[in-house]
Amino acid sequence: MVPLLVVLLLALLLFGAGFALKALWWIAVIVLAVWLLGFVIRPAAGGGRRGRWYRW
Image 1: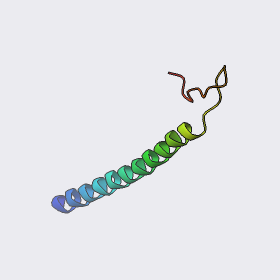
Image 2: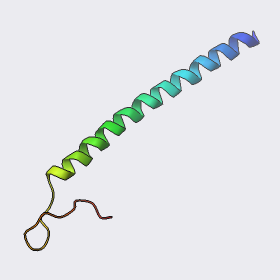
Image 3: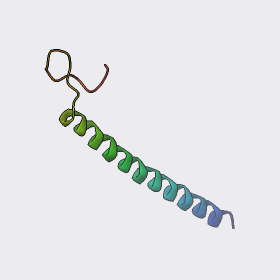
């Protein structure tokens, strides 16, 4: 009975980790797309030249 519970718990843990990693990949793709769009759509800085879209 105990080995069965250990195997089921391990399967549940691995399924949860796989789902979390897949969600993190989607978040990473969205952040990359926003970051790349920031280079295309930049606000104009003083003097007519294009400025940085980020603050640092």
